[in-house]
Image (tube, rainbow, N blue to C red; front, side, top):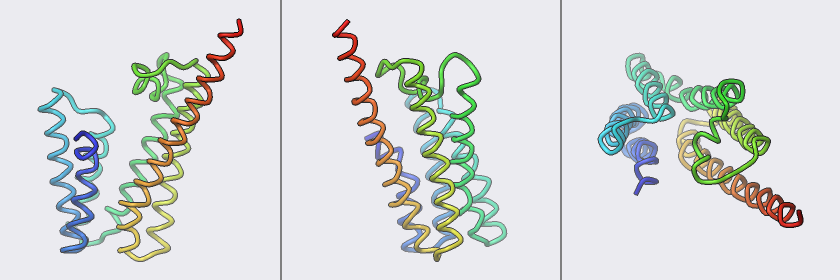
Length: 183
């Protein structure tokens, strides 16, 4: 259920684009993000910063797109969001005692500080790559290809990162357990 809520805005954007074009899709994602933020607020009493950041950028860039009737603004939004996330994950290493990755996942798994830093850098790289890939598609392909990339490409790349992360964690923690068992 949570996965559906997380991907709700992009699915709404994709469907609206297919049926009514870019400007309807832009308005639809603005409404869907507002709904997603409201749902999280009512269910948890708080909204996570990543969702708020993305929602604010959708409102700003979506609003500009609709006001000036130029889709380039909403097309730049994923790059800006990913750049902000890459910067936040990178800078988290220097502020506080935990990286953002550890703050988000530390309750679920136990890793050494070095491993948390490595995992955090993997996410920095992932966000940077997604942002660069988005801009590449925006300027080298047509609008319909970009919309498909936004849903299927970026989602697929993110899921691939999650799988790589899971394999990496499993490999690192099984090796760590074997070394601890030998002691």
